[in-house]
Amino acid sequence: MSSTVIKRLPSNHQWTCPKCSNQQIPTPQTSLSQPSLTQPPTQPILTPSGASPQPPTPTPPSQPSNADSQPSATFQTQVKNNSFRIAQWNCCGLNKSKKTELEYFLSSQEVDMILIQETNFVKETPFQLNGFRPIGTERKRARNADGNLIGGGILTLIKSGVQHNVPNSNILPDNDHTSDAHVIDIYLENSIIRATNIYVPPIKESDPNDHRIQNFKPMLLPSGKNCLILGDLNAHSPIWDQWQLRNSIGELIEDFVVEKDLTILDEGSATFISPATGGSSAPDISICGADIAPKVTWTVYPATLGSDHHPIFMDIEVPGPIGQNKPKKNMAYKKANWDTFQRQIDITLSNPQTNLDPNENSDKMNAKLTNIIIDSAKKSIPVGSSRNRKPW
Image (cartoon, rainbow, N blue to C red; front, side, top):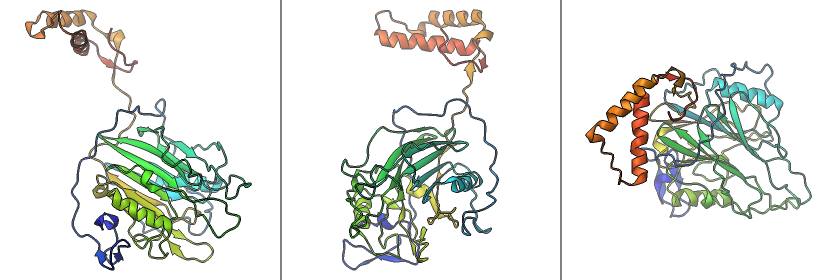
């Protein structure tokens, strides 16, 4: 069995591979190399329109939802320079009080993007949060054939200014009517992260009122070197959950990460506390590709923000500044020196090294002339704030 399944387990644990003999596999001790992230695909980038002002810093909620809502004073969450902070959290219903706590949490913990599961939104529920763009998916099927579409649903919040794209693709099989998932591409400096937000609800086959069928197939999820798969999968395996017995979804995830050479980031910490029994488990899973694994730090937040699940942080080191929708420095045509512009063009055209051949391919000729005009414009038109367009 490949060791990729347990790259980030705690050093005091050893796990038994379910596909092999009873051989125990220790936590790897070798450090991982740092391969470069791949270039972004040539897909359009969706960015928030206009330059949004920075929202005021939210004040802490005056009345937490429960005693576990606020973190301990010793928890350190400082974000390193050139790190992109992603969080995941099963909110167990995103009501007004939790929204207030969520707003303060995102601001105080400097979160760039959060993937939320089990929002319990009904169809087309509007959701707005200052400084973030919401992307939501509602539950498609109720627990029984005649039931209401309550529960489930996912929501991703992306900080304003972070360049991103929402691919128009369905990553779930056509017969999976119970899981919720969507994919978002995040563009950083010369790199891309393909993040999948997913919720797989627990299906109780022994419950006569639960008419759902489990058709979740993780092999269809995005699984490249720059992928992140984050969510509450209700999957249990001793590889990441020492409290619960392995279930069928856990076996599927084990096979998936081995087949696709992925890394499970969970380090053995509990992410869920049962309100009924107080028991712990780890149904919330964080999976990543080979290019992200050596650059990410995984941390469980000590508070639950009124849910029964803890938020989880992934701090990803990036090679340069975080990609933002910064205003471009554009040409101020009203202040242009058109005499200098014309003179620069004449000088360039009269230079034998320019090599403009009238018999040359029209596309090549057009490209050369375009470059001549742009170079002349840079020398004769000052930079301003006017709309960016070609100087002709």
